[in-house]
Amino acid sequence: MPSESLAAIDLFCGAGGISTGLQWAGYDICWATDIDEAATETYRKNHPSVDCTTADITTSELPELDQSIDLVAGGPPCPPFSIVGRTMLDSLEGRDSTTDSRTQLWKRFRDAVDKYQPRAFLMENVQGMASATNEAGESVLRHITRQFSDLGYSVDHWVVDAADFGVPQHRQRLFIIGIREDTRPPRLMEWRTHREPNSPEERQARLASHSKPAQKQETLDRFLDETAEAETSGKPQSRAPWVTVAEAIADLPPLSPAGNRAADPHPPAVAEEYELPPVTKYQAWARGEDPDIDEPDQLYNHEARYHNLSDLSIYSLLGAGTGWRIGDLQDELQPYRDDVFQDNYTKQQADRPSSTIPAHIHKDGHMHIHPHEARSFTVREAARIQSFPDRFIFPVSRTAAYRQVGNAVPPLFAESIGLALRSVLGDQ
Image (cartoon, rainbow, N blue to C red):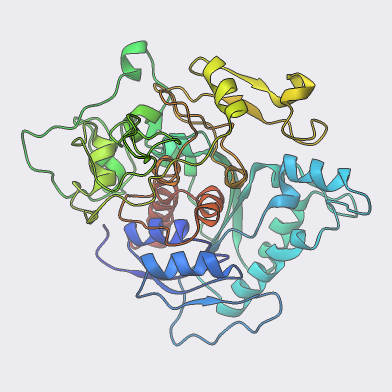
């Protein structure tokens, strides 16, 4: 971790994915805010030293801060910009995705940048923002870029995949970055730490080494090949194969939605202790055997959700990595309107990164069926796949926890981008 901290604030902070990654990258989070009380409860649980407020910043005053700010970061809520969100809104009578009030939340982010005059800003959103248009038919992305350029920032944007940054999940996201002082923003593609495997052998789990103590790492090279070295800039010179679902979650105890009954031979529905040691580097890191991560006292948020017999029957028909689009199923198996929801029943593949964990996972887990068990992912498994370590606790209802995990920016993703920003701010 860089020795000198930079001051940052996190707008629309949610559970704290961006803040967690930025802290790993050496930023001091001085203030965070979100309108969702359950999200700020989770944030405060995991970031007790940060001043985190529950407020609607579209109607409340931005606070006066007693220090200069180096970075304003955040992800304005994105449903109207996502492809699914646009489809849903446009299908409802009297609703239009181009005029939905949430399309204007980025303006409050701009107001914060204008007020605090940070050296840099980082705004995250869904990939669909890059193709969205406003009510006037203008590109939303072009309009936003121009607004920040008018504030004196050199602005660039990238659509990047979280799997390329050590997250065991394919998650395409748009990042808009601005830097003051006529400095070009960092090229995020140069900070990728992982890549697509070159062979079937590279899809095999990389086992953790227990023959020597873990060494404290400066950047994300803790997940790279052992022969890799980092340049003085912190950029990875060598890239490891993508982290897979099995590498991320296979050490977690098996569960059964029907468990915990008297004399029940099934695995339990809830597990609060680990049964096996970690066997991969990622699992060891998540569980705290990396010196950068505190080891949790127990296993949290690992509970199987209820599935009805119809869902379990469909799950049993699926092989690993296969699925059906819900709209293709027979009428009697339809759980949703097939003109709006085009979700899949999908069993995730153990030897590949997961598909994107969406906020919709709080409604059901059809798209994220465990590769070896007849159930969907638990909150802990979804959090692991989002690169939250096990010490990160979700002290809220299971439904709220799923939503927070799905809405979050993966911390490892945020760490890489935070390090990239430091390289151009001169504080690496």
